[in-house]
Amino acid sequence: MSKVIHFPTPEEEEAAMNEFFDRQKLVQEQWPAAAIAGQQALERLVKVLCERSGQPYKVRALLYSLWNGKPAQLIDVVNLDWEIRQDLVAVIAGFGYESNGVSLFYRALEDAVKAVGQWEWFLEERFEYKVLEEYVWSCKEAQRERRPSFNVEHPCHVGMHAFKDGVCADCGVVDPEEPEP
Image: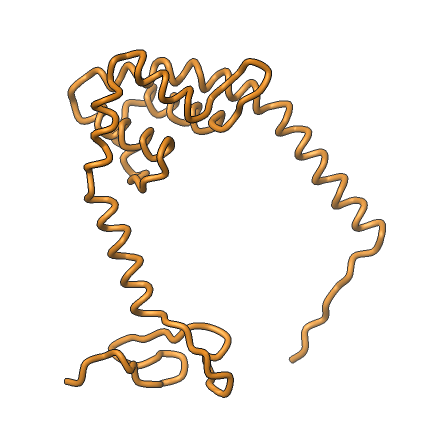
C-alpha cells in the first residue's frame, strides 16, 4: 500500500500561517494576564510552605519540579485543598513570562519562597529521591525492553525490538542479553 504525500496549495499554506499567527497573537495577549494572576497565586502558595502538614510537602515537590525540573508526582495535586490547586494551576499557566515589569519565572519563584523564609527547607526537596528513583527505574526498564535494531535486513530495522520474556514480540528474535535458563 503506498501513501500519498499531500503538498499544500499556496492558499492552504497562507491559511495555516494565518492560523498560527492568530494563535500566537492570542497567547501574547493572554500570557501577561496569566503571569499577573500567577504572581498573586504564588504569593498565596508559598505561604502553604510555612505550614507543617502533608500539603506543604506536596506543594514543595511540585514547585521544586517547576523550578528545577526534578520529576514530581502530579497525582499529588488531587490531595491538595481546592484553593491550593487553583493557585498551582495559575502559577503553571503564567510561569515562564518575563516582560514589561511582570516576571513569573525562576527568580520570581526563588524570591517568593525566600520571602516567606522557606528557602532552605525548599531546597531539601533535592534529597527526596523516591520519585526520581522510580523515574530512573522506569527508564531502565523501557531501555531494557526496547533496544535498537540496526540490521537493515531485519524486520525490526526501522524501530526497536520489543523484547518480552526474552523474545522480540515483533520478529521473534531471541534477546542476546537475556541470560540462559
